[in-house]
Length: 249
Image (cartoon, rainbow, N blue to C red; front, side, top):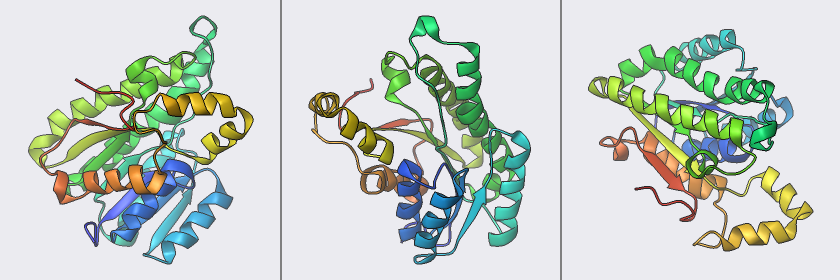
C-alpha cells in the first residue's frame, strides 16, 4: 500500500491509460478523483474504484480553465489535501505537416497542454503543503517526430518543456515533476487492430519486447512508482514505458 492515504487527481481517467493509472493507484491505497468528459465510462470506473477505496468523479470540460480550479478545491474540501496530480487527458487530429491547420493546433493545445499547465498551477499551493507529485504524459510522437502528428507532437513536447521548468522551480519545495511516455493497449488501439491487423502486427514487430503495454499493469504501476516515496530523488525525467521503442540518451 505505497499510496495509502494519498489523494490523487487523474485527468482523462474514465477509460484507457488514465483508467489504468486510477485503478493501480487505488489498489495502492490512494483516493482518486476521476476527471473526464465521458459520464458513462466515468461512472463505470468510479464504481470499480469505490470497491477498492473512496473516489470522486468530475464530468468537466477541462479545456475551459474555469473548471480546473474548482476541481482542485472540491477534492481538497472532501479529502483535506492533494498529493498527486496526473495530467493524462489529451485529444488531437492527425494530418500531414503541410495540411496541419491552426484549428488543429488549438484543439491539441486546448485539450492537452493548457489543461496540464492550468492543473499544475491550480494544484501548486496544495502540493507545496504535501510535498506532492506531478505526473505528466509525453509521447513518442514528439520524441520521434512521427508523421501526421504535428499538432500532437508539438503539444506533448511543450508539456515536457514546462514539466522540466516546474521540476527546477519546485524541487526546493519538495515537489517532484516527472513524465511517462507510454505505448499501451487501449480501447482505441484495440479498435484500430480490428480495422488494420497488418499495420498492428507491423507496429508490434517494431517494439523490442514485442507487445503493447497494459494500461494498469505497466503504465499504472510506473505511475504508482512516480507517485510514491520510492521516486523521491527523481524529478524532471521522462520515463519510457514503451517496450524499448525509444531509448533516450
